[in-house]
Length: 182
Image: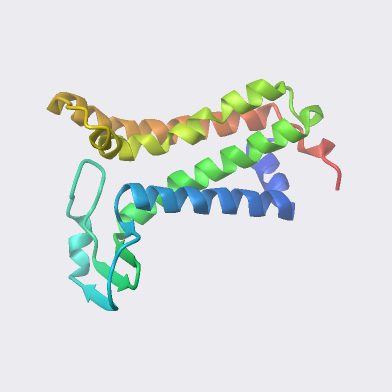
């Protein structure tokens, strides 16, 4: 059975579908917070918009201009469709990786990995978020970085996506979803 069919079979089970969506949604929230597109500040209520063509303007290496600002008491959302798209793809892959890792951990009979290998296989899913937000995280710690090192982060986002797809396929190839109880 192909990895795609195994993933469809796994996601046909409501628990694993909710797990993947919940973990992916949480990851997307953290992604938007790290990019500062979502912040827990703001006073009053305000809606600001700009031309939709500005969404293609870059604000950083892999970040794009927001086209909408929604401010509510205590929350400010900067809506950048391309940031949400990139974050959605990464968070979807991370959610799927973590759900399959949970399957490998809770049902070792369904997976040819042992429990510790299944957990280690989830590390790319957990670390992939650092690819887009690493410059921000590094600045938070106050480390000085050369422009060459910051430029290297341009390739980390695609590498993170490739690693997430690779680990998902790797663990699905070694998982037998037919052994799960109905």
